[in-house]
Length: 229
Image (cartoon, rainbow, N blue to C red; front, side, top):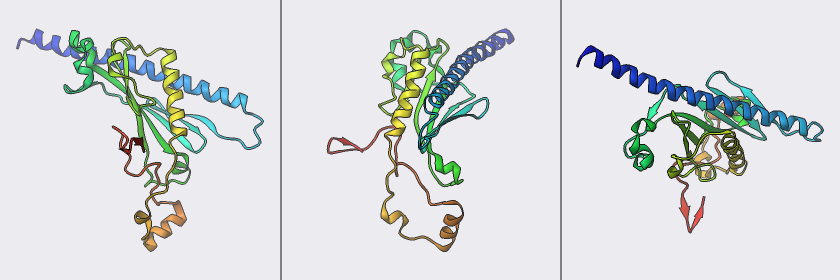
């Protein structure tokens, strides 16, 4: 391979990834602003509540921020790298990608749900859940992988643009899904035996593992008798 061809290949791929990164970071900043505005609006409307319910925005730095509401926390995290979608992904079968393969390179914004008490009491064994991730390409088109209340059909990738309305909808849907995603009692057999060390640890930092679902699966909820668990 000639040097000129080599240089051209490197520059072309790097430029593509840089373009995707810029679009993703711009989207992430819009997510950050919308979440902050949502928190500010809540504070203004609920100043005189008899029993205040938290709805607080925390800026964690360049690649993450969080929203605490009630007993939950949503963490929005942007990965600093750009990814190509795997060949067997449903999106790769669409005409939108087949027409231009560079559209399959995406940045990702993850949305995680944790219990607020996990951070308050430093319960490092507690688990959080990925409830959705937003994929954004260089054309500012997007799709979502996540729970069905949040997810977007893959075949909309060719038309779905990440504008203000879409960002607002994703944030609102994430909050509503989290509010309705209730904490369940863990199975009795999982906690019937506790060592002295565990008990001492519990007294100090509440280390018994807590999560909203035990055996939660991101890809799909388990279905029994036609009902989603």
